[in-house]
Every structure is written in structure tokens, then in C-alpha cells.
Image 1 (cartoon, one colour):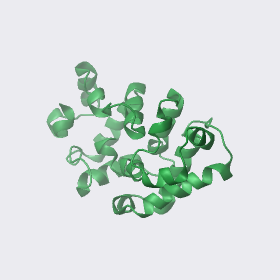
Image 2: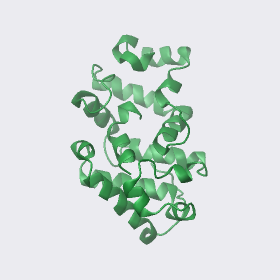
Image 3: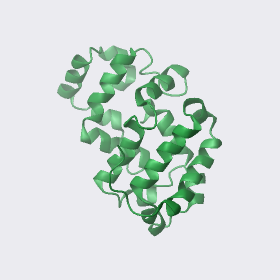
Image 4: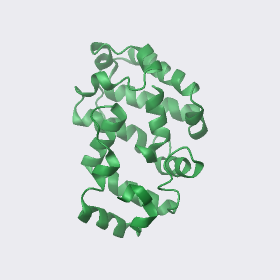
Length: 199
């Protein structure tokens, strides 16, 4: 589970939860949330960027989005979630597009923490990609607002987080030159400011 927490923290280097969850009661989901928190407690990188309450908030949203019943049906145990790098890979292929995007929304909808602030903190602290370190906060916020409005980017980001396939969200997002230049223009970003991420 540490991989998922770190992906949330180092969102720049990837990387409202869905209204309908994958099923399961709060009591069924709690062991999985506890397992995610156990992983969080062991990750110095995560603790530098998220408070424990923020990590618990996003953990609950992720588990509720995927669903405790879905995890159990696919043989994913709380121990798996606490110790494996990609514990949700076993269920990833069975998740609907809405569920996958819900995982991304849990990280980016601003209800647990400020996603843009997290990206900037990761970029400037040296714990993540430095590609965003030279951008003003307003430009980072604009960039991610544009990217997260694109369902294909969200799906690629979900694939990265869930460990399904080899999709790189940023490479996919910047593969369409016309769309890329429009985003850069709208956000007043020079391609050189993004370094390798703009290639």
C-alpha cells in the first residue's frame, strides 16, 4: 500500500470519489483503511507531505470507491494492502471506468487535501519530479485543472495508480501536440518550464 500513498504524495511524478462505491459496509472497509494507515505510518515520504487525518481521509475514499466486497472477492486482504506495492492490481481489471476515475478523484478533488499544494511541495522538496518546481503555483493549478478535465488523462493516471498496464499519464497527456500547446497557452506556460515532462 505504500506505493499508493507515495503516488499520492509524489503526484507530480506519476501521478468527489464516485458517489456509488463498490459495495461493502463501513465495518468491512475499515480493516483496509487501517492497513493503508499502517503503510502510511511506515512511510517517511508520505508523512512529510500529508497529515495523518489527510491520509486517512483519502484512504477511506479509495476503499469506498473500489469497495471492500470487490477487494474480498478478488482475494485482496488487508495484509496485502499494507505490504504490497500494487495491492489493487488484482482488482484493477474489473473496475469500471467510473471506479478508476473515482480513485483519481479521491486524490485530486480537494476534499482531503489540496492537490496543487501537494504537487508543488513534492516538486520543490526534491521528493518528486522537479519538472514543476520552476512553475508558479497558479500555473501548476491551471495545468492540472486542464489535465484533470480530460477523462483520458484521468484514466491514464488511474492506470498508473492501480498498477494496470504501463500507461504514463503525462506522456499520454502531452502526446497530442495541438492539445498540449493549447494547454500551455491557456496557462501561460513555456514548454521549457516543464523540462522532460513536456517532451
